[in-house]
Image 1: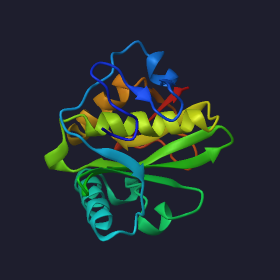
Image 2: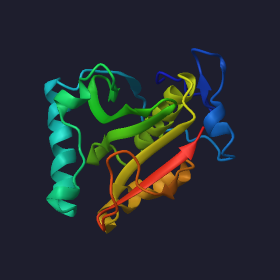
Image 3: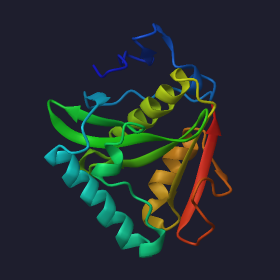
Length: 187
């Protein structure tokens, strides 16, 4: 059972004892993963996390021009303003993701990355749910992100679209460029 309390066909926010309203409104059925894992706040400086963040950076650099890579490192993710989460199965790291403030009631998803071996098992979807639900519970009204436009980023864009994110103009420090797209959703 993960932090949210996966059940047979419903996703329940155990801390509040209610359905996750932000995803329930999307009209999409919850995804019940095959893999049992927890998503909890974590330390981005842990060695296994640093390795996954390096893989995330390497992936971004492989598919984007250097000036268009907007990845947070462990030090930036350790900031008091950033909320960092990790998905783990029996202690093994599967995925990471973070929330960084943009402005009042608006946060950005940063450094969301799933271990290649864990992809297709619901881990990325669960991480996205956790990040959006955390933002909602904290009173945010908008969640945004930046991701790549290349073919290698297509699965991520599909995941975000399935989660209710739509393309939007660049926000915060982002500028128009061919290697990236900004997406947002109101919650």
